[in-house]
Amino acid sequence: MTDLHRLSIRELSEGLKTAQFSSRELTEHYLKRIAHIDPKVKSYVTITAEQALAEADAADAALKSGNAHALAGIPLAHKDIFCTQGIKTTAGSKMLDNFISPYDATVVAKAKAAGLVTLGKVNMDEFAMGSTSENSYVGATSNPWALDHVPGGSSGGSAAAVAADLAPIATGTDTGGSIRQPASFCGLTGLKPTYGRVSRFGMIAYASSLDQGGPMARSAEDCAYLMNVIAGHDAKDSTSINKEVDDYVANLNGTAVKGLRIGIPKQYFNVAGLDADVKARVEESLKKLEEMGATLVEVDLNMTEAYVPTYYLIAPAEASSNLSRFDGVRYGYRCENPVDLMDLYKRSRSEGFGAEVQRRILIGTYALSAGYYDAYYVKAQKVRRLIQQDFLKAFENVDVIAAPSAPTTAYKIGANLSPTEMYLGDIYTLAVNLAGLPAINAPVGFDKDNLPVGLQLIGNYWSESQLLSIVHQYQQNTDWHTKRAAIAEENA
Ligand code: GLN
Image (cartoon, rainbow, N blue to C red):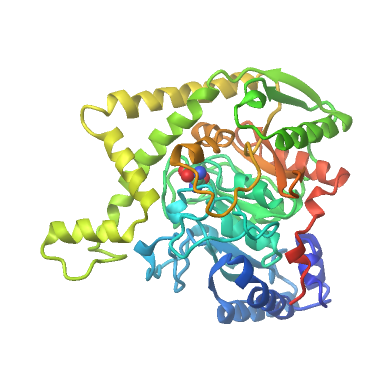
């Protein structure tokens, strides 16, 4: 079969169960595509061919015995921020260039237990700091829709791999938009779950109170399958919540779009820098949802202007603390010939971390320092609470809130925006993490340059099923999620 990469997760699962093809054939098919096409996209940083084939054979044996998990034998790619036992985990940093984790992240362990086959690890901005994936020490990944454009970030490798059909599904992480924005830039569906729904154990920390892992795929249905595997309480992560997990696949038609109240924040559609095509495509998608029976209700999110400054104090503050463990002593990069301990710390960190990471460490350390702590960090935490309250108030009148995922489509590689310009591009995603809410990106069309546009739907706490269900029904009535970049149509 030459077009196994065009099948959905449900079709792959059925094909494997009924022995139309084996996991080995499927895995070889993807490895061949990666070998031929990924040199142009550069989404993978590590390809684990040998291990993948061994996992595929094990899945085939389980499938034969008849008691395999629904996803057994299906390949996936992991963002290189999830620790993988015996396989390099770099987090896109020279600091971890040679780091081999002694254990698996819980997300990775769960994927393995379900029989999913790991094709490899995919590129990302260093320590998940960025919006283009250009901050990776191995260099940029390309957007499959236009190779001279970025795939978004920080989970840009995950998005590019799926959009080029170099993996049917991938894991990502979202601290301030890193699942939703690359999904938007690459024409994919990506879900950022409620904080605490997916274990952070073994997921290299950027900003611990904001980080959350989630699925990236072509459709809501594909995301639901992966959520069924990775969601749930984990005793190894004290912030993961001990709350029953929905069956996201069974619930795909569980929320009625008819009668659904969709909040339209009046502040969001007048943001300076919102691209006209993005605005138009998002409004068209909302019109479609209206035709399907939803009602649009204006809501007031007064704190919109505070999102960027609040996030860019809290995230760097937590990052500066989390990244203090990389000191050149215990593991990771160490400078050559240090003259004393201070020299070892200083040079290992200056040589091991890239420019954006160093910038964040400086901002974070400043915000946490005695004398500035109350003025910056404590103040930001208070504003964070107001942002959350703003959402909770809106949810008294609406079921979900709609927004673009990003004000623009994908940037050109090397566009070299200033840090503040880059940070402003996160305006629509940051508040969701500050409030700990779930949100999803769905592809809803293209701009004049044929670059994908995404709609973001933000839900109340634990509404992952509802979000997946709304997008699933939208996708039953539209075909944006089935559109493929030219490079994905290439055969290996
Ligand atoms: N672009 C944001 C940042 O640089 C979000 C990144 C993320 O979600 N990991 O912090």
